[in-house]
Image (tube, rainbow, N blue to C red; front, side, top):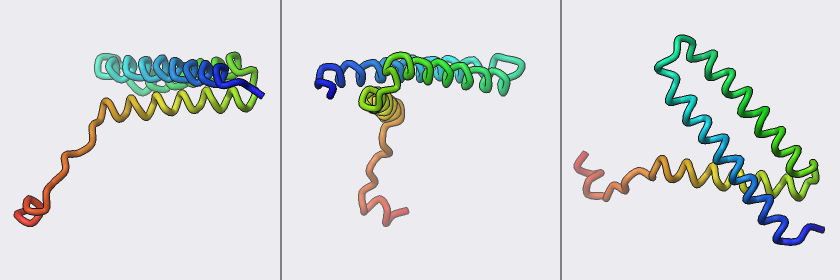
Length: 101
């Protein structure tokens, strides 16, 4: 059985991989308006990002299920935090404002 320090390190590695994945996605989307073939750029970028991500998961974890689960947990936690940070929740509308509309 893995100890908690190992699990935390694999979760941190998953979070770092999410940073790389989402950062390269951000760069790809930023370049889309200025290229001739945006769909080709998007397709190639997606394939390369997924190949890198899956290869890194396989190399880091040795395909052991507990390590893989920790990496996925770190990845999806970072993804959720990034989405929450970039897209804040909609403002709360009070009942009086709803009735006026």
